[in-house]
Length: 119
Ligand code: SF4
Image (cartoon, rainbow, N blue to C red):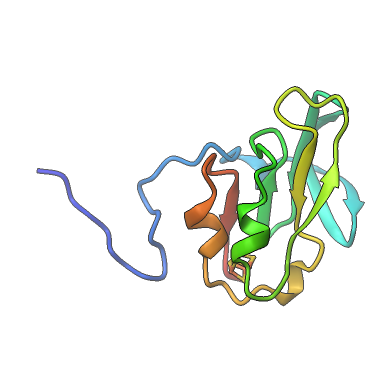
């Protein structure tokens, strides 16, 4: 029988995220719009993970902008990523410090590109 962790603090424990699970172990390669970028960054094909507490894997984001719609404090803005093979727009956590950790973006992202980590 499968166990189910319903803890509101960590509703996705045991769920494998398509976001690069090792991104925090990778070196910071740049600062962009006030947040850190980690991972392999070789535009336009590889764009890395943007943000830390609000982390968006730009190699997984399909640019559908659901996170922009559901975020109550306007953390995200869409940016153009011409030539990227997944999508030519990405969600960027430009107001990461404003996050209230409601996890609406994480739960609603269809490609599981977002990971929220409370400090
Ligand atoms: S967790 Fe909530 S407040 Fe934070 S970025 Fe996602 S939708 Fe916005």
